[in-house]
Length: 256
Image (cartoon, rainbow, N blue to C red; front, side, top):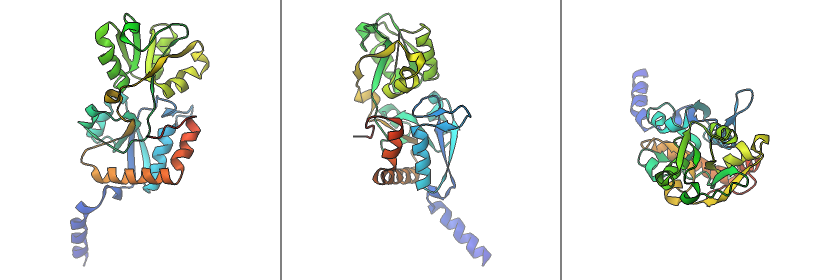
């Protein structure tokens, strides 16, 4: 009887969904408030963190957060260091060539930030000869290098946004280019951000920025993608997504 049971389990195991695992490991770079950051005690906080924990709860799995540098997220995912990337990862065609994505989580605008009164605009003409800081590996780096970097603008990549803001405050940069909400929470709303503000209008580029952010997944993890998308739909329906979003944002970030 034991041999028969073992045989059945061995036959059944390839058909079991990904959800049979007890853990769901998310890669995160906690240097990007209000999406993901660390509290003084070292614990993680932010919209992505709470959303991820809620998704795990829906899937009856335990969330495990694996810290990783943002510019190495995709290679770490493909190397199976974690199961998904939940770290403000924009859905772009270039990334879709390497990995899969969940349904869109949210869509937030891109803005240039500079000292107040600088008169800078997010155009190559206005920024020619200037030093512009961006997060390494981000869509903001891609846009800045493609649209400005070939036209006399020095684009300076940083490992994290907080390092970018530090150099901006200390005068080593003329401006920074980032997610508008991240700039607001990481710089403008803080005492160190006094004297800085958005420069020019929202920068739009569907080709580069894509439809918003999603959870990055390995292409062959189709069962996991289906489970995450179904859980995300339930969070929208039961009001959990909206409740979490209201804690961090004062306007609607849900995908249109």
